[in-house]
Structure formats: structure tokens, C-alpha cells
Length: 303
Length: 254
Image 1 (cartoon, rainbow over the protein chains, first blue to last red):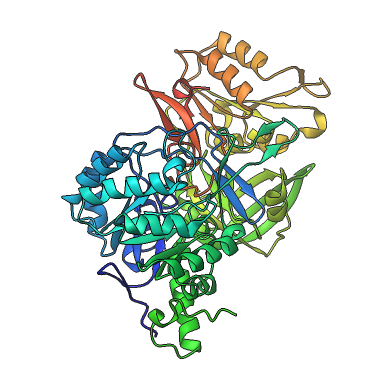
Image 2 (cartoon, rainbow over the protein chains, first blue to last red; image 1 turned 120 degrees about the horizontal axis):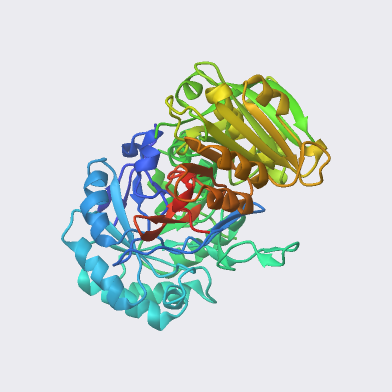
């Protein structure tokens, strides 16, 4: 049995596999399958200052090797999260990462400030959600706005701050460096790639929002590339995600430089995916006589 | 809501119409807690998303039956499974129909591939049920023999008049509603049909409709399958997988 534990910004995770924000709600639905304590951590559903109703349906469409979504940040608001969801999650013996979002730097900071006085372990700031018409994409695709929102949130909390990056940019390393300079403790990437499908019979986009975020195995190579570039450009931990489906994918992502991984769309096909992936990582490490998963972080030998 | 994920043996497969298949699946635990109107979420080999399929029959402690139509590549992959194969499902899911032993007269309305969940209700209500089924034509009609066996009164409608009543399900429904007020109307089918059924039932007839929406997790976590609901005068997004697929017709905004 290899040592699967990792440490991100001083927080110990028993294994490096974290269900990604958005696919896992606030965890309750998956506890029907397995104890949440088996997870390295949980990135909770993106939460904003006030309740958001989200986009009209259809919000989901399958695509070759993946899916599009445009949920539009539907969530009950941060007060509900702190009063109802967080106390439940904190009893589950796993690292709780509160994913937050907002339309303005001030809103993001206000959400983070409310979390600062709770026992949540980490905050993940979503500057990359492509579904919200105001803000969202705008923060994450420009170095100036990305660092501005990061700075606002940084000032409002002492919690370890992960900033989740959008892949919909010209240079991921420029954004990464700007966000690091603005005070991020870690980065997570990639969020979904902006995509679109059209039903040629009705001539309508398949999503009611016209466009949405692409995820699933189709985006995995893009994610590995961006994590590798980013990990080489910054001096803070990088959490890798995007299309991870198997333990071997997770190993690959960590070899690219990720200190931990998040698993998103894979839980739809297999609700046990995060637990299975951790077990498969262990099998790989044992088969190679590697004693700690930490030894594979950034272990790729580039040509 | 209690549900499980597992692989279950298909004990019987049959074609019940063009591109429409029936599977009987051995699943003692699932069948002992499943209720009419609930669905199962089936893994489709090689696909990122599972496919939600409504439960058509329940033999408690033994099996469930599903009847589904090939709509695309995912359902085609599921349809390639045969007797003896394992089917991977998360089940039973969602909120089913309100079944009440005291109901003396109920009307079940099924449109096309919305008919299967009506069979599980007809099996509960037997002769207390009138079932109105609508199909494009005579050769698109499914499950008529199964429905007959339940003892329910059966009214078949076809759009082209090739069998039964020429016209939509709403005509016989309006006639039945005029004769007497039933304890409940249950419906599943295309949205325009559901809208008409809900209108005919109005405020005085208890009416439940089963909705369909594209779905990812199936258990209420991802919020992908939103539908607009008016609950106590306040509009909000409910989720077809967890809050439904069965909703009180008066709550659904479309």
C-alpha cells in the first residue's frame, strides 16, 4: 500500500483525489454510495453571495468523449451553505474546499469573508465559469481582472486560497503568474472549455444558453498540457483536473506537475470514480514500487 | 430517496415495437423499494452520460421491467445488451406517482414512449383505471396487450386513425372528465400533450405528470435537469431527477 497522502498549502489530504466543484453538489447525494471520508477532499458546488436560479434547460448535452453543461451557477447562496451544508460536510472527515464565485470582485470578497470565520478548510475561487453573462469569464481571461479579483478575495480571508483558472485564454501561464502574484496559495485547472453544438434539424443550439462548458475525457490532453505549463511557470501548488477518468489518468496528471487532482464528469458514468481512481493510483504505485504518490508530482521527463 | 448502483442480470429481452425494447431485470433490492413513476439511470457503453429510463413494471423482491426506444447512440448501445448480460444502473431514482389505495377511479394518459410508466400504474389500479394511450399510428402502438391484462379500461387513439379513436388523447380524456371527476389523472408523454392534460384537469382534478429532461448525475447533485416550478406562488428551478420526474401538474411552468 503506497502512501497516497498529499499536502496542499499546509492542509493534509489522505489521498489526492477530490470530486470537482459542480458535479458533487454538497456531497449528500454521493453518501448513498460510500462514506465521504474515503475522499481526499470535496470541492463543493460553486456558491455565490445570494441565491442564483441558474439557466433554463436544456443545461446538459453529451458530446463525443464528453459533455457540455451550462447550469449557470444555480446555488442557494453562501448563508445557506454556511448554515446548512457546511456543518454537515465538516463532520465527514475529509477536506472541504468551498468553491465560490461572483459577478464582481467585491461580491467574491464578501463570500470569502463570510467563509473566513467558519471551519472550512480551503477556498477555491472560480474566476472561470463561462456561463455567467456578467463577470465569470471576464475575470479569468484577462491578467488584470484575474489579479484584481484574486487580490480582493486574498484581503478578505486567511484561509488557503486556490484560484481555479479558465482554459479559455491565450496564455495560461501569464494568467497563472498574475494570480500567483496577487496572493493565490494554489491554482486549480482546467475549468471547462467553452463549446457549442447545434441540432441541425431544429437549427437550435442544443443548450438553452447556446454555449456551455466542455468536460470529460475529450479535454484531458488539453488539461495535461496546461497543468504541465502552469506547474513549470509558478511556485505554488497546482491541482490538476479535466477529463480524468482512471487512476492512470490521475497519475499522468500528477506527473505533469499536479499536487492533487479533481474528478468531474467521470462521476456521472461511475459515481464511485473518485474512490476507484484513488485505488487504481495505489495499484500503479505498488506495481512500480513507488512508496509515495508525492514522488510522482512533476516527474515527467520532457524530451 | 434510497438508491444503489450495480450490475444486474437481464432475464428477458423482447422487441415491443420498432426500435423499442423491453428488458426484465433481476434486482431484488431495487424492485422491493421501487414505485411507479421512478426511473433507472443506465450506463451506456462508451458514453460519458447515463440514460434515464422510466420503470414500466415492478415485481417486488424480484424484477423490474423497462421499455425504451432507441433515440440515439446511447440508447442504441443499451439496446445491444442481451438476455444474460449485465446492465449497469443506478436505481431506483426520483419521486414517483402518488399511489393511493383509496382512489376509486383514476385515468392514466400515455403518449407514445410515455406509455411504459402508465403500465406500472395500471398494474396497481387494475379495473379502477381507465388508460388512454395515444400513438402516431397503429404500428407505433405498444404495450396494449399488457395493459389489457391489468383489467383497466383501455382507450387507444392514433393520430392517423389507423387504430382506435382518430385523434389525440385529450378528446377521450375530456369526455371521461365530463362524465365523472376521477380521484387522479396521471400522465406521461410529449410536453404539448402534458400541457393539454394539465389544462383539462384544471384546478379541480388532482393531476400528476412525469417530465423528461437531459440529465447527468440522476441523483440531484449536478443540477443539470432543471425545470421551472411554481410552488406556493414562488417560481424556482426544481430538478427532474430528484424533485421529479413526477410533478403535480399545477406546479409545472412551461
